[in-house]
Structure formats: C-alpha cells, structure tokens
Length: 204
Image 1 (cartoon, rainbow, N blue to C red):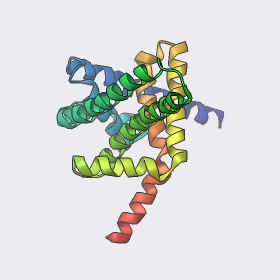
Image 2 (image 1 turned 60 degrees about the vertical axis):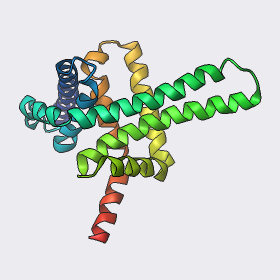
Image 3 (image 1 turned 180 degrees about the vertical axis):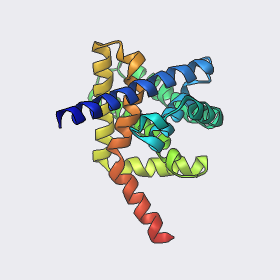
Image 4 (image 1 turned 45 degrees about the vertical axis):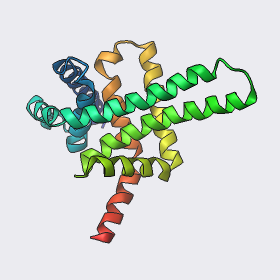
C-alpha cells in the first residue's frame, strides 16, 4: 500500500518536472519572445490529453503541438500581456494618489489583473478541450470565470501559493512552477468543465 502510494507520488512529481522542462525547451525554441505563449498552451494540452500517464507525454507530440500553437498561443499570451500592462500602469498611477476613492480604484484594478490571469488559464484549458474560434473561446472563458467565484478564487489562491513557494525555493522555477500552475488550473476547474459537457450533450 505504501509502495503504491510512493510510486504514484513519484510519477506525479516526474510529470510535473517533465512538463516544466518541456515548457522551457519550447520557450527557448521560440527565443522566449515567440515561445512562452505557445509553450504554456502546449504544456496545458499535453496534460489535458494524458494527465499523469507519463509515458504518453512525449517530446515528439509536444513539438508537434508547439508548432501548431505558435500563432494562437502568442495571440492569447500577448493579449493577456496588453491587458496586464494597461491595468498595471493605471494601478501605478492610482497608488500615488491618496483618498478613499483611489483606494477603491486600486482594489478594482488589482482584481482586474487577477481576473485577467484566471481568464487566461481558462482560455488555455477550454482551447485544449473544444474546437472553437478565438472570439468564442474568449467569450466562453469570460463566462466561465464569472460562472463561479469559488473557482476563480481557487485558481487565484493556488497560483499565488505556487508563486510564493517558488519565491522561497527558486529551483521550482526551472523544475515545477509553470507545469504546477497548469495542473492546478486543470484540477480547480474540473466541475465547471463537466457542467459545460452536460450542457453540450443536452443541446446535441
């Protein structure tokens, strides 16, 4: 019993490490500038397809997905970057002004940044599950984030904890951070994805 539990634990750790190394490899293949977005999307797709079946997660499949994801992955990633830059700049200006009104504005801007990050995670997951146009993908991701505040909170808290642990243990940046974020988002949104599937079946 203990041996089986340890084996399962080691398999999960290996999948996390393997996917994170794939993330860095594919990011470097795109010279970081054009690689990070598609690498995020590729890691997400590999885990959605195979979960913890580590033997089925191969470099060949990853490279094929990475090439297919170049355009869409960069559009999603840099779309997020533009939104975060605009919100971040406004937050920078707002925190320099005192007053209750600007404190409320600060809170709204911070929430907006968190919401944008969570929506990005939803776009990656939903795009891995369904064949859908980019416009409809973004609409579905926005609806998904608004559908359950608890899911939004779970993803946001989970990502924050992963980044906090990474800050303390810098080695995770290379061996675990990005894959753990994708795996956590996958786990936290499971109930919502099942709801979407049930609604699609009802309309079929």
